[in-house]
Structures are given as C-alpha cells and as structure tokens.
Amino acid sequence: MAIFKRMLTRYDIESRLTILRYCVGAFPAVQESQAVDLKVKDETGHVWTFRCSLRSAISPRLVFCSRWRRFASSKHLHVGDTIIIHREVDQDNTAAPYKIEVIKNHNNILSMSGKVEANERLPHRISV
Image (cartoon, rainbow, N blue to C red; front, side):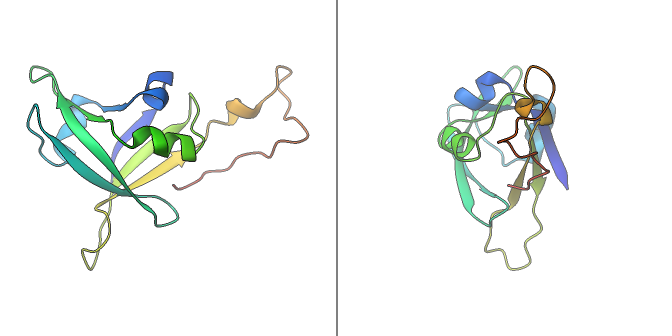
C-alpha cells in the first residue's frame, strides 16, 4: 500500500527528503531530538537504511537524512523524478517493512528540441 508519494526537488536530492506532516503517522514514531533507522527495500531487494529524524514539534515532518543522498546518487535521481514509498507486507518478518519505487521523469532526457537524443534510451517505470 502506497503511503507517500513525492516529486523530487533539488533540495530533496542534494540534502534530505522531507516526509510531509500528513504522512508522518504512516512511519515509525520518532520523538523530536531523537532519530531512528528506517529500512527500505528497492527493486533489487537491496535494503537501504535511512536515518530519520523529526523536525519541528509544532508542524512535524519526518526527514530522511543520513544515507538518503547515497541512495539518490546511486539511483541517478533528478529533479522531477517521483518516489513512492509503500508499506511492504513481509510474510516472514525478515525484510524491510517498506519498499521504495522510483518513477523517472521522461522530460529529463528530452533535448531542447523535444526529441530524444540518439544515444539516450527512453526511461521506463522503474521499481527501486
């Protein structure tokens, strides 16, 4: 079940990913000034562990900080790409409880003329 979807901004890719306050309840409880590790599985089955912290008790937002940039870099994320985080149903409780999916923005590969360059492949929906 999808619990969070976001079109990525430059800040999301270069710094940290912010989970909006209306989605915070779908993630593990985090106290302000504390952090937790959140395990997320990509399309290859690789489990990423993101350090998450809570920002602003007045308008709480969950922030993926540590290790998020490594994920963004390894998946070649760009502004306009979309990520979807799903709650993973794990039968044997051995894998990550969340799954992350990346949908690449097709506009990222278009040339100024609107044509796909000869050496670039058209992206397709990628589960990561």
